[in-house]
View 1 (tube, protein in one colour):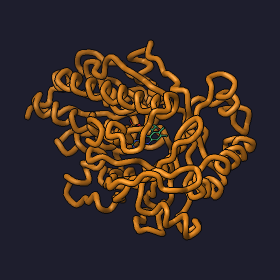
View 2 (cartoon, protein in one colour):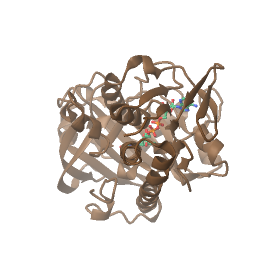
View 3 (cartoon, protein in one colour):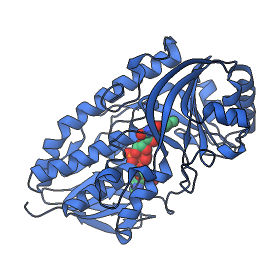
View 4 (cartoon, rainbow, N blue to C red):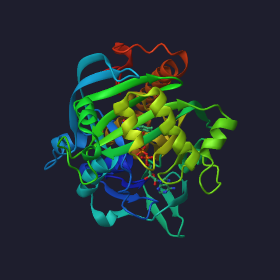
Amino acid sequence: MGMLPRVGVVGGSIGGLTAALVLRDLGCEVDVFERSGTALEARGAGIGLHRMTTRYFHEADGMDAGMVEIELPWLQFLSASGERVYHERMNYRFSSWNTIYRGLLQCFDEPRYHLGSEVAGFDQDDRAVIVHLRDGTTGTFDLLVCADGISSQARAALLPGTETRYAGYVAWRATVPESELGPATFEALRDSITYSLLPSGHVLVYPIPSLDGALEPGRRLANLVWYHNYEEGGALDDLMTDRFGQRQTLSLPPGTVRGEHVAWTKEFADAHMAPAIAEILHRTPEPFVQVIYDIDVERMAFGRIALIGDAAFAVRPHAAAGTAKACADAWALGEALRDADGDPVAALARWEPGQLALGRQLLERTRDMGDRSQFKRNWVPGDPSLRLGLYGPGR
Ligand SMILES: Cc1cc2nc3c(=O)[nH]c(=O)nc-3n(C[C@H](O)[C@H](O)[C@H](O)COP(=O)(O)OP(=O)(O)OC[C@H]3O[C@@H](n4cnc5c(N)ncnc54)[C@H](O)[C@@H]3O)c2cc1C
């Protein structure tokens, strides 16, 4: 291979770290700039896994996907009264954001993972990309990978007209240690991903690793994701105005949702959710909220600069494939760079069409899944077109 490019990565979450590791393993010098000042440990939320999310764990020496994932043998649907109305063998796998993050971070060279380093902007000419950090310093790279997530400043700079479209609903999220659940609830939920259809939405629950990474039943966390419709304007504005009177756009972290909304979740749970599912909300003092958006991009490659993961397409979570897509973008970039003999501009041109196609396919499919479950209400348990998957239902 020719001279390998020096690579800068903006955003050190799962997409950025996977890109950094894949490119480093090819032989590139890689620096990661992460805005957050701490090692991002506190993000305890669950994620559904596809093989692409954990590909680094499967392929890199000394890594083992068995250390980070929980495999569940069943998918079930519960009625509001708690009756099991559907049951199917499934074998989906789950983990948590911080378990995957911690595993990847351990493999990367610490001095090149720059915490508290916010990228404020960049310029490129035909020889290099200059990155400007918020603290006034700069870095020069041959290739810049922007993995700065759903509110990407890189996307805003490169594709200024891009729309962030509200899907019409938010996700309420809650996690509780399994050890705090009543025995009947624990038994009802322990081996399954559990769904329930609700007025104005649907809810799902699955176990995830504990904050210190334990995977055994009884030591894990029960993780709940509940999608509920809020009309744009009044209802959404009211929910997203936090405890401090600030109108937030993307999320309300734990501890910032106003008390009346938290109280309402418990009333709603009692009225409409299976008792096992309602118990999780009752035992979560500080549930949090993520607003669901669609973001569609026309380009992902800009000379020497790439947008990957949520910085490119942001898709609804119903295929549980957001991190898998970010990782697929990262692995494909490594393959394109190898095939282009280390030339970053040629590599990005070669890489872009396949990743645009992947992002469009996933965006369209998850939009359809969301519209069917939240608005058209024609979600039938067991419909194979609703299976989780990155490349297609169940794939
Ligand atoms: C309700 C919900 C449920 C989900 N469930 C799943 C699931 O089950 N499975 C799944 O695979 N995915 C799921 N996702 C999607 C998943 O969370 C995202 O797709 C994934 O986190 C995207 O990874 P990323 O690395 O592209 O971006 P992010 O994880 O958003 O990371 C972006 C990083 O960039 C940093 N950053 C931002 N701006 C700058 C800057 N200027 N300079 C430096 N650093 C910066 C941020 O601090 C952050 O660390 C879900 C999402 C939601 C909302």
